[in-house]
Length: 529
Image (cartoon, rainbow, N blue to C red):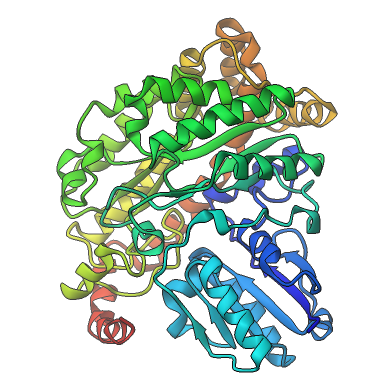
């Protein structure tokens, strides 16, 4: 039963995470290709004709849709607006839509214009869908609580996509996290027992990426890469051998828990494998807030010392920070600023607490009558929480904007970058290749940033890098270019904030408008549980 299938990845909106303004410097259009859809493509029957369209790279024209038997769409919460536009377009052309991914898995009951939901983990539910398609007994929803072994996961179909427009390629080693933070949805999606691929599987995926000619960065998208330390150490030893054999074509980045800093062997292996950045969920320096949300792993040692230990093992630390916890004191915003500035974390992704579907936080807030609306998945770029916080809402929003304006003032940002540069070892396992593309990026950075309002801070940072670690000059340029994006997004956020304040005034508080819709919203949300 031959089929012609279009896989569509919806557009990701402009946010801190998109790095859209930075990517312009290096001729890239977006950060990652859609790993989920590329993996799904590898699970489809071999005789099917499969095309992939990433709406962050290209556009979907209505005339294209009738050429296909089905359209498969996968999305995160933050992509729901674009997702809806795609499914509506398909509905108009009577082409069936098959949907999966985190957004449909969490909220499928409220999503229109989808014919078939293939939810949870595709290794389990996609074969069920394909079986029923073959037998002509298709159902509306395919779901399962089974947590499959990842040895069933095929190598993603990198042959159906051009990787040139992307700055990094995502790969996955594990699913699941041993911790149980109240606000995190990883437990509900993937469970608490980390499941891993074999080192041989992962290296085969590296081979597949390498075969395309791509030779930049690999982001291991595990929500906690070190959830199973023994397995990770086996993998890292295999990656080191692979990198040596291939002359270190890739640098690596990933996400991990702060207890990475407790294991010197693990950090040394990551350094030797070519890891140059790790994202940590730090959340807050307020111990009572960490304890109240169940993030006790962050309370056991000095967080600033942990961050520095990782940096001194050759890895930049970027971090996630949250304000709006019930236990946050009134001075939490100053505490966050002080911590971030002392930490040498250039990219501090700060957001207002967001109640994601199916988390323990979500259910608690519903029970307490404090949930207002569903999350849009973008906690760094919305100025109102989707729940009633303990802190006055306007104080929370004002404090959040204060953090952004402070940490992403160019002077503060470049000071943190220099702190990082001073801590990194002089030797790197993978140096950024200085190609024509990098030369153009350097010239563009000199022009756009050197002659900007913050040019003095920019050149001061670059000169200090040459003084302390000249071999890391290309790293400094990369940090500066990322800063260009972060500064512009902050300007947009502050402008939206100022417009909001001007429109409603501080006397007409946000609490009044939120309180007016709470009863109806909670009744509606209860029916979706």
